[in-house]
Amino acid sequence: MKFCDDTVMAYDASRRILGPGEALTFDDAYRLAHLPLTAPSHPEIIAGKDGTDYRYGRYDTPRHSLVVPIDAEALGRAGEFQAFESELRSFSFSDKIAWQLGRERAGKLHATIVGGLSEPDIARCVEAAAAALAPQGALSLRIGGPFLGRINTGRIYLPVYPCCHDGKDVFGLVQQACGARLTRFYVVGTYHFAAPLTVAETADLAGLVERWQRVVLAELPVTSLAVMATNDDLALSGRVVATIPVAGS
Image (cartoon, rainbow, N blue to C red; front, side):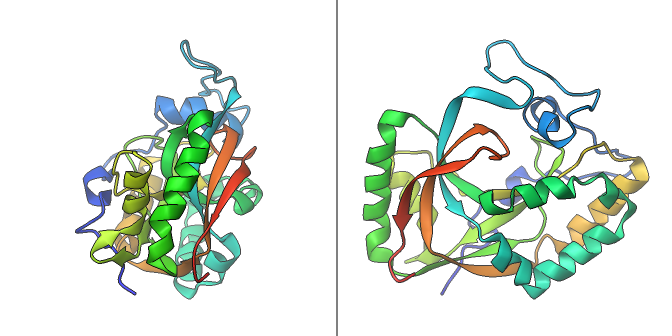
């Protein structure tokens, strides 16, 4: 099975590079959507924002997205992932990672393929995605090493590299079938900081990312896609409202 690589995906254009003397701090997006759920008493929390329905990291109106679920148990059994996480835990800054939150989210891990689905669009998107997947047969994906983005700066993501069929990103085919923007960008928000980092801690994180970002941490089968509804951006309230099986899984 062939997989997309960094010549196809959009990760390199979107990476945040931590420079010498820099300290990792939280941007407003993280302080509004994630920090209230990661560290509820943190003084930098943005409790709400005009024009949004966020209130302490949650919102009344559920958001719907088409996602690829990630099997946290299978990921955790992968040797390269175990080695990466062991090194991650070896640094002093690991005490600032909300590990308990990660355990709570283990059953909700996912990468978004099509975000911002309106409820009337769900059935149409499910049907279109199923039709796009039907001729593809069995699917797999690779989980890459750590990715730091320029938005939500308190998160460490793991990027997804989907398999290619006839040279095409299969998740991109799903996006096109659903009439969504082609992103070449599917990341799993895996680790969340509960406190900003010092300059020294940031340098350690930058070195870790540099060593591991080109490593394949796991190769996992794709057994289904799902439409997930959630009332928070960490999907702690996430629930599956539709499932799209993958042929051959």
